[in-house]
Image (cartoon, helix red, strand yellow):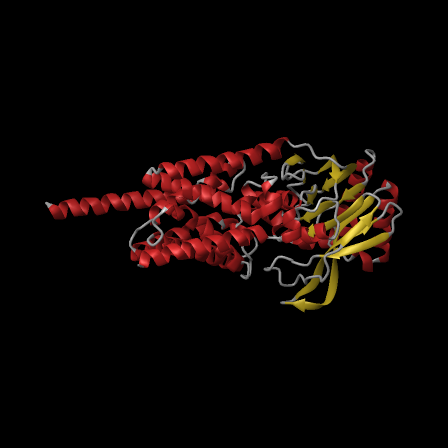
Amino acid sequence: MNSIKTKKNIRNQFYIDMSLIFFYIVLFFLTSFYRFNFLIFFVNVPLIILIYLKPLRRVILISLFSSALAASISLNWVIKYSFSAYFVSVAIFSSFIFIFAIAFNLLSKRVTNYLKIFIAPFLHLVLMFIYDFSLINSYWADWSMFQPTMAPVIWFVGSYGVTFLIVLIQSIIAFFVIEKNRKVLMTGIIIIIFVSMNLIYSYNAKPQGQKIKVALLQGNINESWNWRKVNSKGIILDTYENLSIEASKNNPGIILWPEYALVEDVVSDDKLFQRVSNIAKKTKSYLVVGSLKWHPTFYKNERELNDVALIFNPDGQLIGDYIALKPLPFEKRVLPGNEAKVFNTTLGKFGIALCYEETQKIAKEFTLQGANFLISLANNQKLKDTQGFYLANLYSNLRAAENGKYLIRVTNNGITKVVNPYGKTEIQLKPYKKGILIADIYTNNKVTFYANHGNLIVYGILIILSALLFARILDFQK
């Protein structure tokens, strides 16, 4: 009889575990889709319940299975870059989840008081700082990208601080489900009210400053790289010239073309350079053009290059260029630049991030150099019809919110948009369509606490929690 009961209990526990893993995977997957961002507050709940106080051997097996499955499914879109990029990304992401689960299980057995609700956010942030040294950094674990409208708190703690709050809410929900503890519930209510106040403020705040009109051009050129190289001086240039002239009827102060709008070395081609210069003259606007710079060297039979943004003034003069400091790690033939430039114009100062740099912290460097607004040029053509296409655009909201600046993002086929200093998208173009986005933005001289001091507050929180958790572990061992 006892053996039958034991078998039944084992079977029931297996079904519970499988159900929790299923919900964990589903939450992970759904969060990456538009309009399901709020699910980020629940993503880790099934995992925490699954591994809390369980035998270590069982947690290892569960964690290996669930982390590999979650990473491989949620990152399936990376295959669009290459299979090697996909396998590297899955390996890094799954190892993050696996280490998090094992460390959480071990700590939760030694920290048995109220402090246990802080174990998950503490570990998540520590791992983020460690994984910052990996090939693809740890931006993929920066869950604040799903909830960037968190001003004013994000101005002080940055995206990592907001991620801490998100994982803390996940932990509180999980522990309340497990223990029904009133103290945990009250803490959760206070945190949720605090987060809600920031969300409400960010959605309703009205930006102020000097107003300028901008024009963002989405060419929607969906042909191959080789086709674009052949046609950059013809069909593609004609497209952007016509869009620019049409946009100029609204008298914008600046017109933006996307990253790699022209797959040509504009500066080295006198005829092409003159034509682009004349477009700036015709439109009487500053003109920012995504281009490249060829190198005479090769990487695996492909010519090496720089990812470049060119800036022309309304007189058609080239006033500067910016070479991407941090190109996509998997594009080995794209060589990095060596200077984070800010361009001083009659409209104000601005810095330009190129594609992958949206995920990095380069916008902070522009702010410290006096940027009044931020620009992002991208070409997410490879990610068409994938979750990655949507996910890639979330980081621009995060960068705008962290720095308290307007950010204007222009892309080849989407998502082209304007983000205000509170991380809110004010207006955007429909993806996969040719179009012009005309909008007003407001420049400012603000330098947020985060831009000035980085993760100083987050470091302080981690140091305090380290001391408290360590003291609790010592008490447990006694």
